[in-house]
Image (cartoon, rainbow, N blue to C red; front, side, top):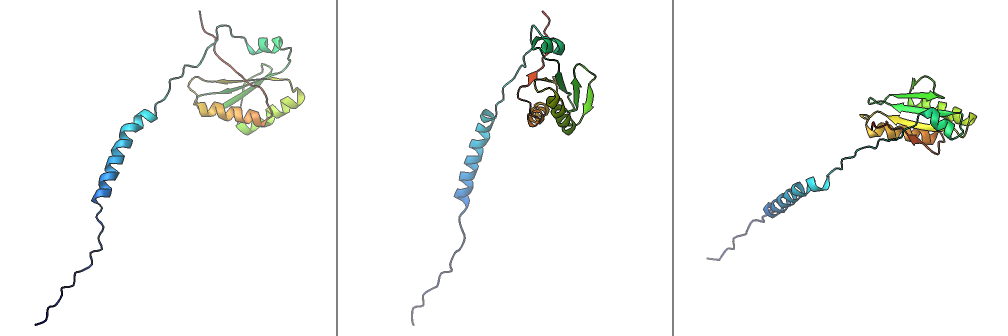
Length: 147
């Protein structure tokens, strides 16, 4: 009788248990360290003790024109020129109007006021539009503190 070799079947499976263990360990490490990485900073926006009105500011700078852009908490924009009525406008309309006012008086004072509950994105969006309109300097309006 001849000896017959038993042929072994080829096992093509990959043992994934070590990979699962390493992945689980990395997941735990990231979950533990994530709260420390995403800490925020509380910001208390400033208020001024000696606030001037827009008219006083315009007179102090010997400037006859001042432009006020206000942003409310819903992202609505209002524009006032020379202490006129606040007119609600879209951002593109504000861009056109501010460009027109600056073409008439390039030294116009531009002030931006935001509601205390307005998301910061709306303020940045407004500043970006004013930059596109050619405004070089922008004043940020604050509320006067009592006392």
